Image 1: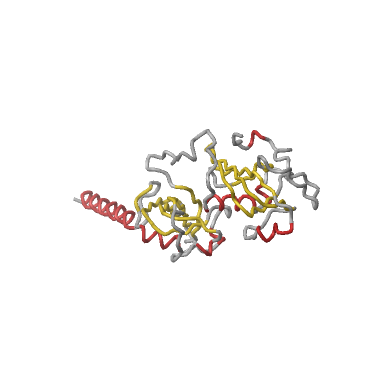
Image 2: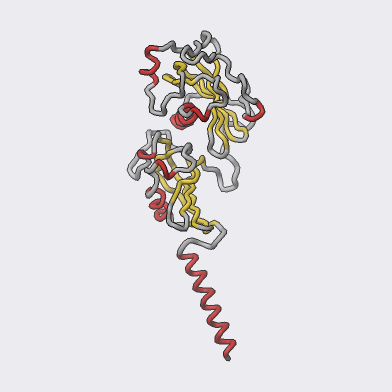
Length: 280
């Protein structure tokens, strides 16, 4: 009788524990569906704070539609939030009331991590993929081959700006620091990440332009030329300016007189094997 009573108490405790997991943070180790509104609140509690994004180079989003959410109990809680959103230039624009221009929204997944001390960070933001895990491809992003040039979207511009506005992102000190006053086209290539070849008009600077730079004003007193700027976006959300050259049919690019750097040579001193190259 005593052992039956003890067994009954153990069963009740196990049921209570399982119930608590399902009501709370889910089963440890596995991903479980989560309440979208709850995870949305977690996201907006940190979305407008720049220091909440780790690494700091990831995209900032204006999320306007929240489709689903998942959670995973680890030493803390991981969240995944599937949204429709457009990119913005700063965290302060990632507000609950933000809006996206027509035709600019894409599907993204936002990863959040809440540590045991209840500190939440945005740990990753990337384009969402179908449930089977197959990367979404379009005629513009065929795996292996470079696409035909197409108009530059706001998302493309955000990647360009994120890459070119930080000195640490340049593969070589001898690459031109381009302030782009006009975006002409972009060609893409899916590799272990994504290569972007931007054709832009702008001017060469001594240092990387600020992300907030008004390049039309900056370039007003400088020689303007057409550039091809190649940016590599890795699967880990890092970006790298891997090449800068004169666009076909354009005059030779000017030298950077302030630094003595010849801006025409886009790969001098760069180990080509380290960065996937976009087919010419």
